Image (cartoon, rainbow, N blue to C red; front, side, top):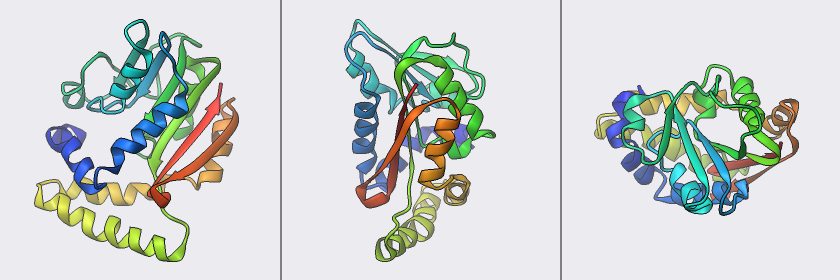
Length: 211
């Protein structure tokens, strides 16, 4: 599915989020708390849109690595890239100062394994950050979100030739645990102080914890 999506993936994300996804990615980078010279990992990097702000944050003396399973997505990314499975990251333990993952947790076969792998490759005191689609909790906001996300999004994507993949996107949100449950699962993976906050009135959720 993602091979077929690759050519239009970034354009669709910008259109379907009204460009808000760019700010969400900046918030994820800030939560990773990486500085110049740091080493950061972007898990399920896709076309590298989440990797780029990490690259800027670590600078020329640092290292930002993107990992993805899909060759077609990686072909559109730029930087240090590794084709690999997020559930079996090919890196030693504790080698990164931060590991991030955006909009991919709902797509993997074993969410706990991915979180555990992110925790494993992050050094003690480093950050693990997850950015995901959210769903507002207020009744009025939730109704508006559902009308857009479940009604309009698949139709717009279908007009661009990607209706089937975005119908899956709508269903896949149901695979995500509630925010408080995801924080508990991060702590079960050995992370400390897991927290979360809504972005854009709950359209996205940002999670972070310390290794």
